[in-house]
Length: 414
Ligand code: C6P
Image (tube, rainbow, N blue to C red; front, top):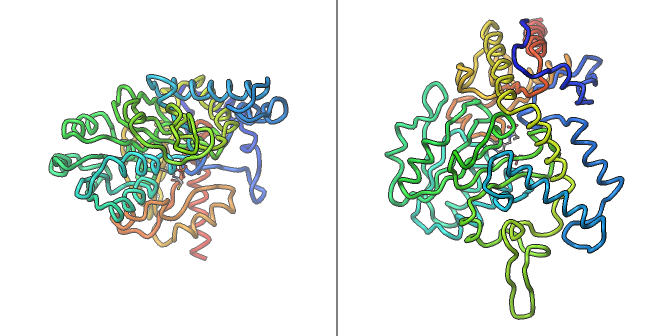
């Protein structure tokens, strides 16, 4: 095991994450499932705890001190998220439950409204179900046609095929910025430019990208960008839909009810301004405040440093995994185009069995199809194992993973 060379002080960072000091089956926890959901630092836990213990009151409701305070904190969280992704204004940021809801919001409020039967949506073969199923439902119920950017043998998108897929009927292009299975990092900017030239809008699923690298939605020029708070040190129940102002203005609301109206009477209803128009009911404002604290934490580390750290970890993990007899890495083996997740199979061991055996050693990985079944069909694999990394991951945890794999192989040989 070599020493980490990045600027992140991982030993110090780990002290902020109480769960990392816990044990599982009597072994130190080696948490390698941050792509599913990350751990939370005390700064996030404290920000939420402080609200619940001292000033808790609903937002946008009361004219009393604590309600106004909640509204201020909620608005400040939106400002922080907007700055984090370089959105032009806080009003470009809609708070939702998670990336799944953000993508459904676009499918329901944008696509159902602005696409006609016979229009086309281009997506890719590597999408998570969250960026697959809403479009399939739309195709079935609304008569739009889906087309898929295929994969190259190394697990990148075959963008040579994009021009053939784009037609005058293409209205939407959507893809994962980083694949949750292959780890493939796709540069959105050239796809956005080509899609826009063809007259299509672009939705980027940034769920596995926003936690791990700098995001500049203005530079990307995408029309929508979606991500979840719980994968980026924030709590569950809060996610983000970024949208360009003119599109958000033109879209009808997704859900209706309290808070999202401007005026209601027996004759009709008018909507509140963006983004509140899309936030019906009491929002998850404490979770949004937690996400704001997570964004502060990541910004203090520096997203370039976060990316550099994960590059180093994934490069080391690729190197070590390639030494394991019977191991196959799924997806790109070049760490420059691979995010902080290593997906693999071990000959002769089902990924679920491997996951259970690793758990006995305190090593937490994910096994299965990772909510990307069509991709697994394309790969010809029913399931894979995935170890994923974050700001608190140490090289020695990669070593622990490899040792646990050797031990699992030995156990199954007996
Ligand atoms: N992927 C994983 O283990 P939600 O569940 O809404 O927070 O995120 C959905 C989602 C959308 N896009 C991508 C690329 C994702 O990776 C995910 C979530 C987790 O890979 C849980 S299935």
